[in-house]
Each structure stands twice: as C-alpha cells, then as structure tokens.
Image 1: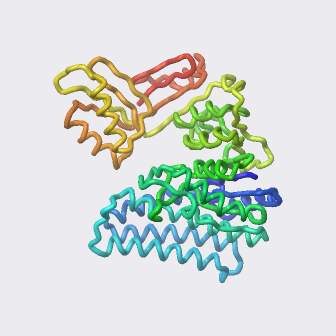
Image 2: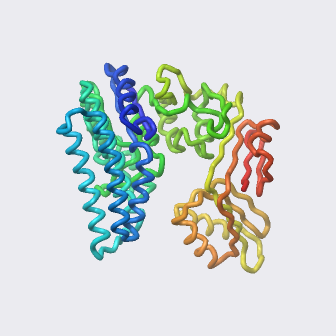
Image 3: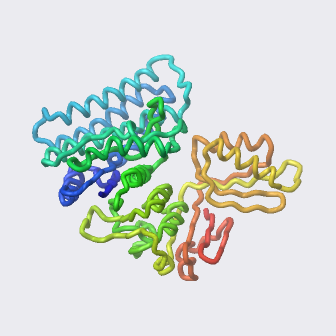
Length: 426
C-alpha cells in the first residue's frame, strides 16, 4: 500500500501529465492512492482571482478566470485528440461554477460575512478539483482503472479557513470506510490541500498543504510508504537555485526532517512528518524527472543527520520589536498577551529574542494580516517593524557553511546553538 503525492510542477503541462502516467503505470499492480496538487502556478492565479472578487473588481476577476481557463483547456487539447471527450465537459462545468461565484459576489451587492479567508478557500480549491479531474481522465485514457475521490467528503476539519485543523477521528473513519473497499481493484486519485467542515464548507490546510494531505491518507490507510515526487533529486542541503552545488541528503530521520521543514525547507510541508512518525511509515522524496533514482529516505534512523550541514533561506520575513509604552520590563504577562494576539491573527513565529524592555520576533510577512496586527499591538506597545527580510537557518553548521550562508551580510539579530545557527538578514 503506497500513497504518491504529485505537486504542481509534476503536472504543469501535457508532457508532465504524460510523465506522471508513465510513473503510475509502473505501480499499477499495487495498492495506490494519488494525492495531486493544482497545475503549475494555478494556486497563485486563483489567489489573485480571490483578491479581485473580494474587492468587487468584476472585470479584472473575469479576465483572470478567462486566462486560467485558456491555460487549462490548452493542456486538455494536447492530451486528447477527441475534443468531445468528457474531460472537456467536466472542465467547462468547473469554470462555470467558478464564474457563478464571481458573478454572485461582484455583480450583486453581496457582503461576504464569513470574511476573506472563507472566500479564499472556496475559490482556491478549484485548482485541485480541476487538476485531479483532468489527470484522472487521462489515466483512464491510458487504460488504468481510476476512481476520482472528492477529498472533501472524507477529510474533515474545523472552521479555521486557510488553516483547517483536521478532525482525525472522523477523518480516519471516513477514509477507511470509503477507500478500503476501492484500493484493491482501483487506483484512487484525490486532491491535496483541501478539506471541509462538518457542514460541508470547503476549507484548506495551509499553503503547500498537499504533502500533509498525503500524510493523512498514509496514516489513515496504514500505508507502507509515502512517496513525494518532486522536480529535485530528493531532500537537498540547500536550495539548488541559490547553491548550485547543493548535496543530496540520502537518509535523514523524522526529527531532522521536521526541523528542516519547520524552519523553511520547502521540499516537505512542516505538518507532514508527525502522522508518518506516529505509525512508522517511510517517507521517500523522489524525482519525477529521474523516477528510477532512490531519492531521500526519511525514517526513524538518526545516524546520518549530522553528516552534511543544511542551509535554509526563508524569504518574505518581517521583524517586529515591541516594548512597553512606559519602558517597564517585558514580563510573562506581556508575552502571554502578545502570543495570544499572534494566535488570533494566525501569525507564524520563526525566531524571537527578549531583553528587559524589548521583545523582538521574526514572523512571516502576510500582507493581509501584518498591518492589522501592528495596529492592534500599538494599542498597548511601542512597535517598530522591518520588512523584506530573510531568516537564515543552518543545521549542523561549521565555519565554512556559516560564511557561505551569510555571503558577507551582517545579521540584524542572531542565535547560535550547538546544532543550529539562525540569523535575520536584510
């Protein structure tokens, strides 16, 4: 029993989808569940559509939907000679539903009472629904027995839109009841990133959440292995776009993978590891470009973790320095209040330092949340902010790696421990 996860880069065009079909065909005799992301940069495009709809920019949102539609249909045109194939009708219906939402919110005087995050999830979810439908039709075209599953019928979350919390008990019951009878005879394909509330309102699990979906599936189905197919050879010790000599980490532990993911390594979603570790399910990160290569194995073994230093750059960071207005000490009561506000605003903290009168914290710069957060903090604190920063993390560092990672830049703040060094740089 395996779960395969294919991200947007692996299905970005017709040739890529054909390549996925070739990989899947090699495993057609086993029990297999495919978790698939949206095509290419579709999520980014849908985010822009959601912004335009929320701002009631009817013409702009319609133009962006048309552009997205043209790109998706162009891929179908390459995949199917028969232009009457049901895949074309299905895709048209998805776009008709998307346009219905666009017209409802932009052409009528409708207030989105549930807020932007709710609208975001309803719009952005179309990416995965459309991509999996397209891929499932192509796999059937290649004579593979495929069942298309709407993941929202089995993956249940709370009502935290854009960051849904999984209801594990209900989700595990639903996945086992729905999928166990299918996987002996059919390849199941479903969406990453998506879920729904018990009232069946669509939710998402956070950006890049398809890895997490795949881990949830693996956990609930007691899979032997989860394979995440990427456009890189596996988990590398640095971003190859920034460090051309980046090295492959052939074997790492669950705990090392958690650390790398938490601090910004984009190859694995931070939430992916826990459900796998809980049931000792092996994770492999492999290349869909070179599908016979072994890639990276993530398991319980820790013996190889320290062998190669890893450099992680986390972009688009903001640094907030908070102090009390009367220059009294920052004490536990202040910190409790500050972190409660961070939680209320859904802000992710990457690094923090405290002095007697100041508290400095590095956070993800979310343009929709940061101005409101600062305004709220300013009611009780002095607030200084810096934006457009990077958070640099080096695991198992040495002098040469530190020099390579910082590239001559002076850190704004720094932290160095036995295993890890961290810096905020401009």
